Length: 636
Image (cartoon, rainbow, N blue to C red):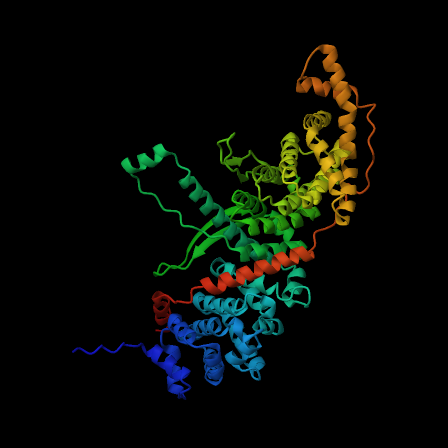
């Protein structure tokens, strides 16, 4: 009869078992513990075996472990500090549990509620010193990972009591030092902005958030440019990776077979996932800091870098680009896959709303001397084969109109994203208000945009949803802007003829819309005022249709032609402008500036929950052996 061999345990596992049994540890054991290569998996395995009740019973031992970690960081020993930071990260992930309440119990279990302020202030001070000192980037990365684990410990950031310490002892200066450094921001910048995005959303409307105050008042060009370069690097990499993957997946069958026969080696494009935390950070910066507009519009030298595991150092590649134009390409990719990117699309629209309200950004986008080659991804449709549109150098306003038109045309689905369509119309309205105010005549094929809007309305009318009224009100405003003020921004008088022709050609859509407005007004008190506004917005369109339709019919009868050609219709329109009576509408060129309404706040809260959950569950706490070798070589 054979006896089972005893399971061999690592030294680290044995020490943690002893700690969790409540055994006293002498100073030599603690020194040895933090010099051993940390294994977060072992720590999490040991803690996850414990119930919440058992955790509470072991509060004293866990408090001691936390205190020893803080004391160990003060020793300024790189390998110890690296192990301690990863130990703390694993500890936070294990201790923070939903059944421990609002977070106060977790704080008590982790560091002792009575001593929490002193211990956390000391810990944050140690982390600040690591981030601003000249230590290795891997140690700084470990510090940022710990802070990310701390802020994402709870899905609800506002109920995460540990974040309160980062409000009392802000790390804005620490993060700023990383972001302004050309070397550090290439490898650590995305981690810094990801952390900042979450911190900016802590008790956003009920609390004087020090990070929001600092960001809103920031006029440091180096810091703002640092923000821009980090975001440009991320967006550029994402665009390249997604375009490469779509190009590969769309290769023809012949090319696929040929690749078997005539094999040629090629570099595989690695995937680059969508990071909502960085997109949220871009939104917060654009929303809070008006000085950032200059960074959006300037051409920057962006570098992409990563830490290698060999001795060759960092690999860096540089390119020159414009953040706003890169963001438009990025947004087109998000819009082309709306089913999987609905949250990102809403965030993109919020960013575009903030940009389209900024006078400097509008001036830059409409400047005919500032032109860019911008790639706009176009979804494959039955009537077209191309999957991309890179126009010859055009102003960014032209590109943005193209992007909005593309969105309107390619997202007509049963589960209609009416809120996104409302935001799209709001962006268009802001562009038109600027063009009218500054008398900018953009050489744009407006017929494409008009048809996209009308077709979107035609589709949404089939859904029989009264909640679409706000969409239709925006549509009415946009067309009234063209009708009443088009002479100030349309490129030529002929554009008016084309506008009236499209309104007459698709008059049935507006007739149906008018009927729906009348019927919806009887469905409830909440719809009466919006329907009244919609009917007022449709007045001029119906006046145009009612004025010209009889004249076109009379001409057709006189000339014995059933359907006049477009040129003939426009001739009739030109001959009868004088007798057309339109109603002047107030406030067409005014709009309510973007603000975080209750609906927007709900969306952002949900988004931050999603980000915290994703960061907590996917952050890898394992340290590569090459990092330890690198630390050991420096210590020699």
